[in-house]
Length: 172
Image (spheres, rainbow, N blue to C red):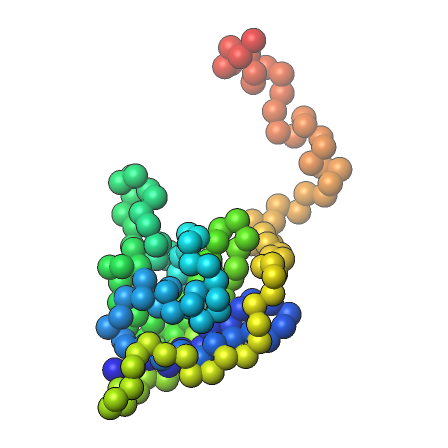
């Protein structure tokens, strides 16, 4: 089976690639075709993330295990595309270079049979050029954690601790 996937740079300009890749390829193979098709250098850390229909970030599939064995991680090299994408879960987020935060939205468009004589993976369509710098990211707090404190309340330290609480820890 061949997965037809659209990869869109999260930016104001239209920058996208339509790719075809075998369903049994790993996410690491997919990572490689993404950075090649967008002409990213390919020497930075990257991760895929499961996501819902509103693009909320979920389970991470990392390029390298940086946890030091402290927690189980899913790695790109151990995960096939058909394990991460399906008609029921058609979206992923891909982040390349965690300092610049190149962010791409990935959507499964179609699942088809391989065509005889075709080489996969392949780029079907390309639109737009990658800008010189990653688009600015606007991170917003999850509204469920909004505590309705105004700026004046944040400067009122008496709401958060008192002098006696420091004595409990013998810091001085």
